[in-house]
Image 1: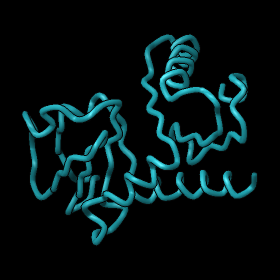
Image 2 (image 1 turned 180 degrees about the horizontal axis):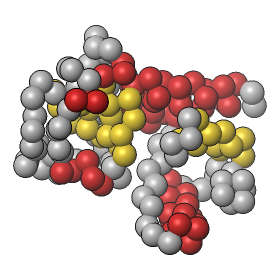
Image 3 (image 1 turned 120 degrees about the horizontal axis):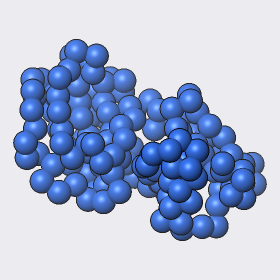
Image 4 (image 1 turned 30 degrees about the horizontal axis):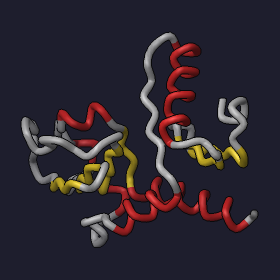
Length: 147
């Protein structure tokens, strides 16, 4: 789909919807095109979140859990600033939550696999762990250096 829309240097990572590419379109235009096409293909709305390499770098730099294991820190990417993010959270045990500009950072002390944490605001976003975000930024940087 990305190639179909004329995006350049398209690279995917771990078959979970992670795509790195170059485009002259705005984030909103990219989002709208991909959501419409995914909806056509899959018969239901699939949300798309877009971040620039600079934004990924900022997200990683602002990670409040830098001293924790990166596979235990999840970043929930959102379209807009989190509103009432801490309201109505359920089943919080040892998880620690921090709010970013357009993301929610969660440190899962015992790991995600046993967590029952429910953050209602997260249903409007998608989560990636720090390792994945680092890899996405690395792919984006490599793309820039190859130009």
